[in-house]
Image (cartoon, rainbow over the protein chains, first blue to last red):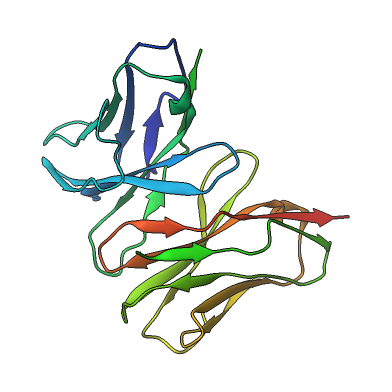
Length: 114
Length: 113
């Protein structure tokens, strides 16, 4: 029973490029959460999605960042025109539903901006 | 807004001994969940233990147990018989029903042989 799959594990981009991070939830999970971990800090919530719907994006920067979770395929976190401050580990978590269901985390994508 | 505070940036413990990591939180909600996650050097996020706020009984998972004091909004993690593999960053986290996790800043735990 595969866990939450994130790819790539490591992503290097130059300033101004786009970064696309993918997350496939655990089988049977329809809720996806994205978190960002800056160096030496805890995880910070970014966005919560269900299939084809953004439920809560209160933690997403207003510009350059977007997320989707299409009917088919993985959830995508997209960062346009990356800057050095976007360097971080980005974690995806999934759960079955909202009540009494813990979130299971992927191994994260480490994004480095040159 | 909910906040989670871990006041111990770093802790050390001798192998086989017991250590307690502290966590306090702030919320006006009555129903919520609390978690401890472990992040080893590999950077994975591993769920250690979970506590439901409406349950008075403290959660236990093998060598890991919590001391949940709802009135004081305190949620400490006790690790018994510490092992070298317990060396990691430990995060306390809060969750309202059906919502995001709010994490503390973490405590680095080093288990010494």
